Length: 184
Image (cartoon, rainbow, N blue to C red; front, side):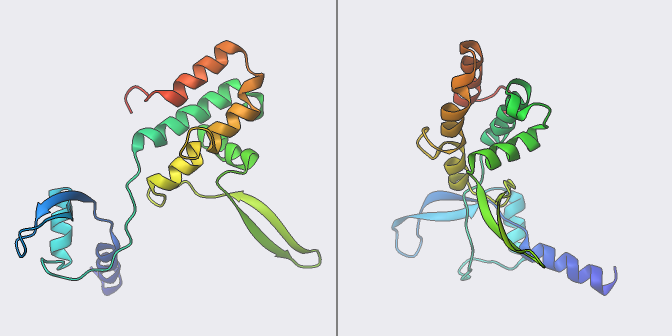
């Protein structure tokens, strides 16, 4: 392995995420019951050991709650249903329908400013990335239903789209929204 490849491999090892689980444990120094972050899997234990993150070591970390893959899949089932059943989304892939939902609702979008030579500044709403690894569950819940069931994309769809659907279609989509999907 050349030195550049070795350096890249070492950097990847240093930056790879480790899954941790919050557990109640007894602190051996005080005998007090505490919440502690422990490696969730032997692979995570090994990764910490390889990085020399041993017991008693002070670490700095940015923590985020791991996403629930069931809800991520559910969003794609919903966007597929929209592409198959709602004119505004017809013919789009699941991914593109999800992006269209962001753009149409304005939920999960950010204002991006462009400076166009000879024209001036243009501000445009663009859908933020929903990358599974980069978004925590709390932010996802805000986008999905505002954390309350009445906001987010679901609230917007209920207000702006579902009212124009036949009762049978509304019932079908509510089942997608309400229930976990089989195999998720």
